[in-house]
Image (cartoon, rainbow, N blue to C red; front, side):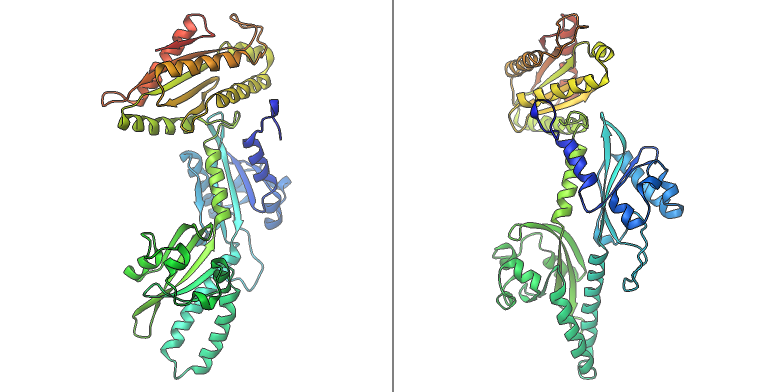
Length: 457
């Protein structure tokens, strides 16, 4: 998918992928509660076609109390502008999809969901929800917990129930190695008592080689438990622990559930670790987070990203007592351009200017953002006034060099921009809004003095 000049529109590409290609439910609801996308996964799972759902209010498709709960969840995301993750471990669902399998001990599909706001020109116009079926993972987790509890109960009456223990042990053996999650039993000294097949394969050792090795050595390559060790937390509290971690040696993100193990006298003797690989889900969450900071039209940083970057760089410059520069960019006579050439041409113009800004800045800390409408901002950390003015002039020259025809402009037959440059070294008497105000004043001076020029505050 290529835009003009061969550049890739990553935002459009990512959105197309999320809508059409992922084996997940994709639900889009606009700000008024109307369903705008009901993908094929949802059609298959719910039995409701897109033709019968798209364009209708969400509360008509999901009526009653559950529908109100879903609508409230989507409303919170829309109002907060924050990504919401409903994790598997809470065993909840977003869309009520009935199950017809008598072997599953609950009536509705268990789901994890990532819900994010959708922006259009810095305005939240709705939300998108990615829904994953985690019913089987929940069933496996519940079954494994049930087996552990059964094993503990059987140990309390060993002499009286030997036959029952043998049966449970055989069943446990089959379940233990059949579980696709990474499972390990640890003693109170962090030593491995046993691992299942999935865990041993991930560690690159046989189950026998793992026995007796400290878990922090086998998994992390350390000589002592790390500060974030969930087993150590469980040993201190004696309570169930659940955390999400990145395991460097296992090359992935995991949801680690630690279930305490007690002896027949109630003494804490170790734990069962159940590590569920959530790498793909984490990548999806990160993708949604990136999209929430991206301008939907131009693909560069949006106003939300700019505001956060400004606060971060302001604090950093204040600590180091270094300069922070800002360039405000405004397209000359853009309303006349839109009136003459149409809004599609206006959108294409905005994309070209955004691309030019992005290609002009090179340092990792530099930020080019769409500030609003036809106005852009370029944030330049640790840049002097002279350096920022030089960058601004390069931007002005390159944009005029695009030769986008604008016959209603009074300063050039092509699209041009006016630029305001300001530089401050933050102190206790100034704040980030002072830098923005200074750059705005310089921008207005550039316009008063004839446009298509750089003015420095």
